[in-house]
Length: 393
Image 1 (cartoon, one colour):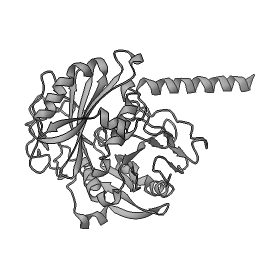
Image 2 (tube, one colour):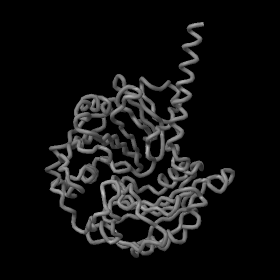
Image 3 (cartoon, helix red, strand yellow):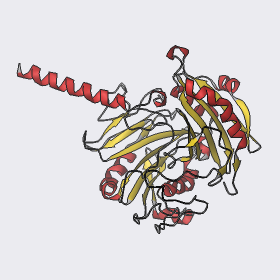
């Protein structure tokens, strides 16, 4: 009787936890990235049974990685594992006080990674007490650092198509430095924050970046000086702008300029990988620039298809579905993907364009329920046509 009571209590607890996880997942952002979810030697069975979706995985573009740290000094651990088909990225950002405690465990995790010959899947050994969730959005997996209910850090695992990551270490490191409000470095400066490691016979890179201590003034200078001055081109911060309600960014500041369609408004989640973040009702619009390894059209369109609940198709089929639109006079690949009609009017829909420019792949994407995205498609196309790259972008 006592054993049965314990079993009933455990089942009830698991049910409640599952319900809590589902409550925080937006239906149109949850996606399967790969044919098989991530596995590890101590958290999943040999048949790669899927873990539950991480309740805090953002899916798609990242949010500001230092948001929520308050006065804590930020620190980032990252790893780049090159592969001919896909480059694998592991990354965590948090308070330096917490991140510094797991440097050795992070190194051990990376050195344990094994990637399948086709680059489609990976396994690794989790440090004791760590656990993980399966794929969501761009994430192949989310690794949680610490015991259940007491996790202070999460490690994202994101594979990007195209391979050749080793040649793009500098670009990735400088992108990550920018997320911590640090200035870029040159090749000589890489040695201060990177080290070479062997991952199953592949020369890989582990990155350790410590950001500047918060100055107590807001916002922090973009060059990492922490002196509270605004970066060039930043709109003035008036009395009505607080840390919780930042002044709206100018559409002419930053790497691109554009005409904002009527009814579109700046979103509060710009930052991290997002260079632009806008809202049109329930439709979410973003601009992200990634290294050239992310430029595989087939891989990206199939990833987006997965995000709206569609199956993968061949490169030939994708070519038939892809249009060409002009962005700042250059040809960009454009797709419009809707989830299965059986899901109804609020089925997920993605409208996206991708364009190589300035040594990066630029992604312009609108995602949301079909009944929110549909009325904005023409405005989205007009917005793409209004975009111009600022000098140096």
